[in-house]
Length: 117
Image 1 (cartoon, helix red, strand yellow):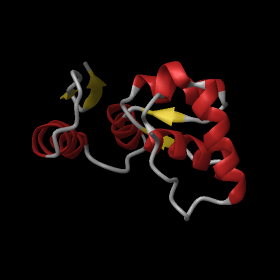
Image 2 (spheres, one colour):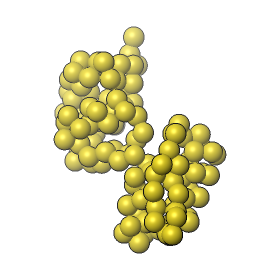
Image 3 (cartoon, rainbow, N blue to C red):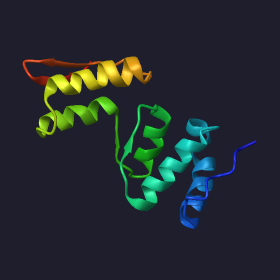
Image 4 (cartoon, helix red, strand yellow):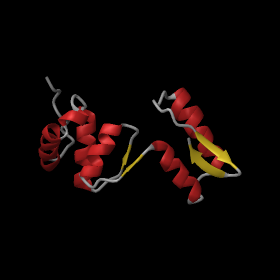
């Protein structure tokens, strides 16, 4: 049994949720939040930040841009939006350790060059 979809979604987004529920059953079954996220990003031309491989797969098929959290921080450092040491602390200590983001990757700043390993 699926939970009711939130009222904040537009009628078009609700149609996409149901379409994606069937189309990506293998990758997103039981993941209503991911289905809603994909529908919103598709309709509103948004970008998804996730480490869920099923959602990344579906987003790629739907031409919705996705970033892993670590990738996004690497870009932020490359664009001089955040110092490398702050990105390293934010990802490793805050996202992964404190907020319990499930990730095998870690962000390292060797010679001020960010790398997700």
